[in-house]
Amino acid sequence: MQEKIRIITTRNGRLVCAPREVLFQRLVDLMDHAGNDGRAYSIGLTGGSTPKAFYDWTVREDALPAGVRERAVWTVSDERMVPLASDESNFGTADRRLLTPVKIAEGHKLPWPVQVDPHSAATVFNRRWTERFGGETCFDLCVLGMGDDGHTASIFPGSPLLEVDLAENFTCVEVPEKGWRLTITRAGLERSRKVAVIVTGAAKAKVLKQVMEGPEGHYPVQILQAFRERVTWLVDPEAAAGLSSLNAVRG
Ligand code: 6PG
Image (tube, rainbow, N blue to C red; front, side, top):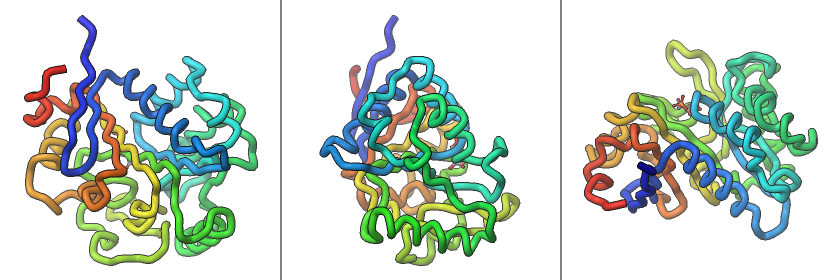
């Protein structure tokens, strides 16, 4: 039996529940629509296992429209302080599995400068961003994931970034037991024109239910609530299994 597509409005944004490949196509559509006024535009990819499956699917299906390939400028919404050649590098992974296979021009790739110290990397990246796009805007489309502890980008539970309101789009932060990370800030998320959160797998079901239906202001990813009208959640049925609001909807 074919799995149905269910769409609901949640307190954290619009939520689309569908099988993975349908979600991947929706993400491609969001990438396409983000630049539909014809100018150069920016897409921030993310790390984790779901984006890797998305990259492989996109290349296999030749799913990226020519307009996206020609006009989008690509970077990542968070990064680890490792060389691009490392499997741990979010941009390096995106480049090897998606950007290079679909022949994105080198001038449309904007990796974080991970070869310097984290503070300098954040300063340089903010400066490069402002020179290219202006400081008052962030991504046209910011792609995020959600960890099973409710983190998003590199904003983890207990993060100092939840306590301060930084003006910059991007910053560095030391994450206990994970080391230094580079990440979009709350301000950068607020300045992004669209945000897509892709969440798959049964391991996410419990926290997704809490994020959507439990206490507010508890998980980092709930910071998206403040601008939910610009946020789309792409969730597979396994991750959405616990959502009572969704399960009340007939597909
Ligand atoms: C990272 C990500 C991180 C990720 C989530 C979800 O660099 O790891 O930015 O926030 O998106 O942990 O990852 P999965 O796709 O593996 O569920």
